[in-house]
Image (tube, rainbow, N blue to C red; front, side):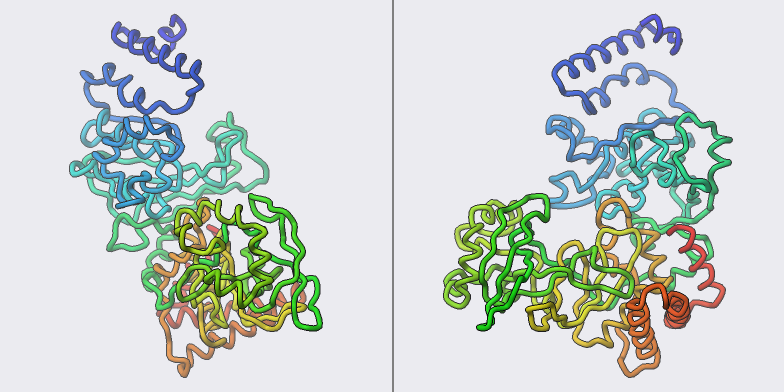
Length: 543
């Protein structure tokens, strides 16, 4: 306590008592193995120290970063009222009951600190996770920048330190934010991107001068991707590029879907070993894929329900190739597993194979959550509908840092006739009926304007970067196939796919084709040559 008094230099005896009580509570929680974030203590412990004090001109802090779902139930209950008071629970129904997704306690602490300790016109600077500016759902309430129904909060500046990874031993997405109490946020907001100019990690004890020598700072501008919905995720780009993207941002005429989800890939993913003369397949399950391993089985099955499988890792820009097969036993119209009595008669060998895993299939968390075990087939799958079997698809990887779209068509795997390719949940797809439609869409998705919109607003840390929602913010129109713009873009995409298949030998020609795609895309969206260059430069900087 003597050391604390010497360092903190308090005079009020109430301060000492509060610190002693806090220490004792923390010590007891550690003894009880409940070490971590103690919401009730944070809510109450320092209140006596500051309650009678004059509000501050400046507040600076680095609050704990802990997801809502990581908190014990008692801590959620203890702070729920505060989350609601500040409007941080922006979602409804089931999502709201769960805490509205990946909400971080740092959000609550920032709002509580501004409310309790900052005077009107005062400024607060916090270290906070960068995802609060980029994630949909979890960050919506935070981006209201209003203390419940009360005072407005003005964002003055954000520093994006993600690439610097300033915390030793942690790879979290770090940023700092400065806000002013009592004023509304004006967009665009100054958003500075810090990037390393030399390889290697910057030591945590480096001074500001040393850090500045090893980094560059790019001044970007930020605003909600949907300007009419001010709580939507932020889009960040060079100021001129951000202005140009106003012509590109909007809702697409196409609808994207997630790939098929099995919750137990080791059962459904197959390797075809041979095809017997009568047409039956000798198949072996990929028993060691996924988090949950299953026993390895080699059996003879019918070929009718076996399709080429496409994983996210199988997809690159302008190229995608299946690497395995998948057993599709889902009725695409009823969106539940084929009736057992029907499958048993029509495909008895396939049914016998699935029965080998019945107990594990019934225990899948998703099966128990979305299906009725009393009436729904035990092998039912998720995110499978008629669009899953469309002949042509534009696909891209869901977990990524950039959009790399490709067109897939019916494909023939050894021992299997040509069939539509089935993407699984690590890939996102748009179902289309013709190759020309697919190539037109693929060209625009891979163009610089589209990529900049997606790259500069979608969070690259949550696994949702390439999720279906991205088409809600890129205004790709469904053009008549007879228009020149449609045919040009479709032909350019087809040529890009051909060149990508040749590898390094065709890289220069491929870059020329991509440059022409950018020009055609700029014409479609009404971008000037100068605006396109700003877009391309901004994309290079943030990629």
